[in-house]
Image 1: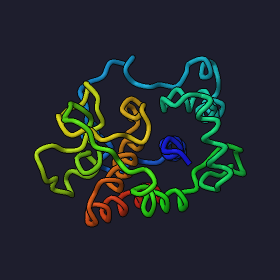
Image 2: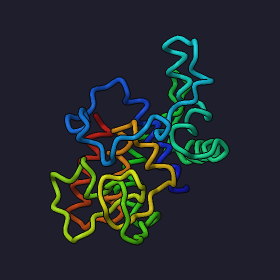
Image 3: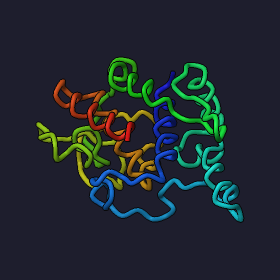
Length: 214
């Protein structure tokens, strides 16, 4: 498994959840951790696959390798390899009704809650402007008092605050989350599991479980 596999699985879970109501915190701009972005700065589905198709075809096309690459910032070749790894390990499954890839929520939660801290530890870097993550992200910041002067951020010049850089699970996450509140929440909670203390990890695990099981 590679860390980008988790990003891809979270994105796939977000796509499956797109027709369900968002948690209350994520229903307004309060979930964002950046300044206003131009449309060109947000990762979007490739319009080549989405023009002049019906609803079902449109939804199905979002799960193609091309579209998953376009919306995660992961290359098409790496998306394909990642899907194969996840299906082989059982952390992803093929939905029997649609034939589309689907995250195995129980297995994915197990990896995040019990292993991500050790398998993909977060390296901290210099103080920089960025997008708040982990305990500083909107999904957690009202529940956890962040100690210290500098909060954890994904380095990005469009971020809303200055903090200590935290290496994300995949290079493109700062752009991938710009139009996906659920993906931002899940990745931030995963980062809290990577760098947080026991209480912070417990709160993050409960929130992630609530999101993924709703």
